[in-house]
Image (tube, rainbow, N blue to C red; front, top):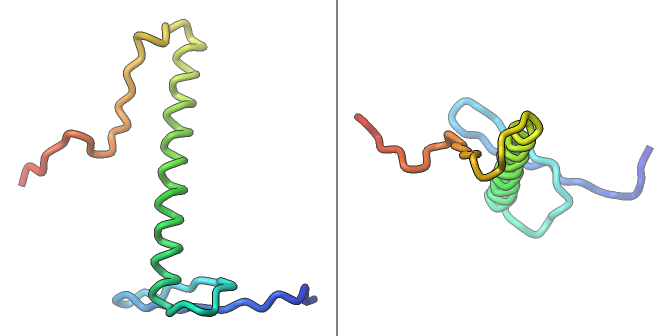
Length: 84
């Protein structure tokens, strides 16, 4: 069944891996399509972290810990040094 929308399949090879992207953007080179999707996934990952931290804070508040006493360490490398 067709809804009248034509899509484009973009395949990018990195090393031995092939990555495929489906898009309706036709006027950009394959490499730009890849960059757009990679940035989108980075943004989505950021919001997943924010959601996770918010849930942890609400859990703590629900268990009687005052909001002022909650310190959240996202553990994603802030203030950490490479020890090699």
